[in-house]
Length: 471
Image 1 (cartoon, rainbow, N blue to C red):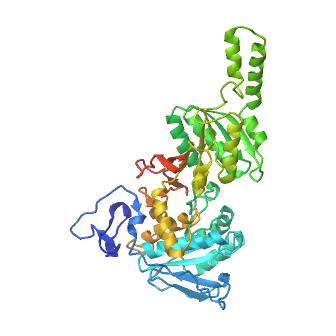
Image 2 (cartoon, one colour; image 1 turned 120 degrees about the horizontal axis):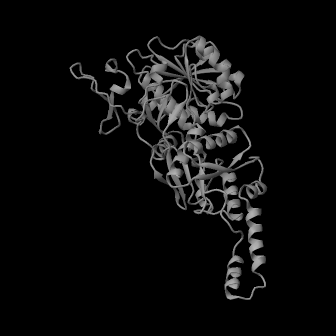
């Protein structure tokens, strides 16, 4: 049946409504023409009947260190160990795909969770010929380089990962020599291209999405308070570019140390509080001592205010999340900048901390992030299989592995070429639709969500298909 599969733009996958979930391939009869759907490949509808995965490695005290093992994960529902850096080659009819993750070191817990997510994708999506080869990068560029060498030695046809840009840069020279493509979990554009694809959430696309929505609501002037690091600088640059494209303006920019606990000085300057406060005091001074009723009423009204005059922007972008977001939002209120007069805007990082809905100052804010429905389903399946809630970035490992598993079902069973990876119709995964562009950058569709007292509410759904040609 797999031999009749063509490129995914001309293949239909549906789920049979039977006692279990099973994969049905249609349109494969020799007397039926291929039908171009122009729709993303829906990875969630490729799921086989779910097998509860076993842990990726046994918790035996005699087990050698993970870095000294080679591991295969197959749809048969079990993991196989091969000792030593020169493990035996995969079966001749297998399709080996390597995944490089920090399974030890400071990001070890995240790496292991991402491996669990990748394993879940294997069990749910992969055909029997698919073999996932996990390798520990130890969280360092040198470890990633060693892991990639071992993966190449095992005959890997595609590399998923590493997680960080510096590790990708260390790995890519040897994958290019072997003509192997990389689908990294990084969001850094500087390492994209020439056989390297980034699957991470690009901040500039999120900025563009939230500004597009805000501009559609009539907002035309923006402020931004960003952490003083590479991420913050990228967000600020992206905001200026997105504003210029829409004829809007960025009127105030503020940076802060994200490791600090007090941002009062930065927010006070950002909001022009001192000037607005001084204007209030001057107006009150002019009215004091006047005996006419109009002046008395005006003074009484001013005495109830903290400042006069509008804030220097109609919306303010806060790309940080968690406690920093709560602190910044509270300070905006303290310095007399409140919603909805000034709308707070945010990016994808907000969806990692749903508890921000308890912060009254954040309620009513808008942020751009992937659609929530499919990720909630993923979280449920993941927790049922592994017993814990996955960290936010685990979905990247699932979608990357599911995409590779689907591509492995091509007639050649090894089509991880650039043309296959950059199919213009893209894929529909845990985080909505995505497609890889020829320049190595992932293109995603973002929804717009509002923070409410009861959680996040979607106010503009994400696009469900790509209607324009790929760049």
